[in-house]
Length: 248
View (cartoon, rainbow, N blue to C red):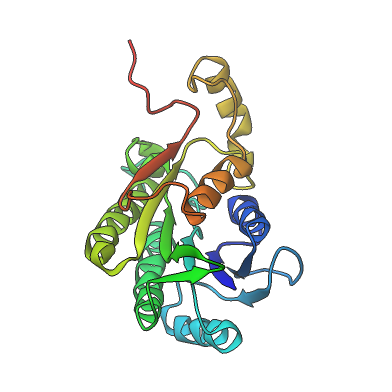
């Protein structure tokens, strides 16, 4: 039995990731503030991952049902309620994004990793070696400036560094840590700016010439979870249709 925990799993990228992992024979634990039982989940937990005090209860439910965690996917995240110029951005919006996008996953990872380390970091299933791993879903906004949503960029930049520090600390334990950095992905979060990005894509923003889909991210998660990219802890994989290409 392989157990994967996916935060923000009720829709969009998180739900696509859950489906991809279920297809890889993972028992998927879906965590979200609003989530319903059913495929592809073996267990659903309604929880706000930014509520640090509730994280112990979340882990206890997973441990009681499965007794192990093999993979953690930190996907939960939000955009600003309103896009505002950095010169006008408020403390309330900043704190909200930091709590959900950075503080919550930072400490949830800490707790889950300590739980992982109580067991073997590497084990065998049917003769196949399976390493435990943590995947952070960040954003191209970790390195690309958007002055009208600065707090989002800063929260994702912080999460990107969290992935690097966890990778550094855990490399010798057998737990691999990765960052997947999505580009412009069509989800509920980006539906409100579809017209804006349709125009930008038509003007050449994305070399591959299309929106990304949640399944694009899910396939990368599944590849990492399946051990198909070994010897690579700390790796950043950008799934952005070529937005990482510098060109004149």
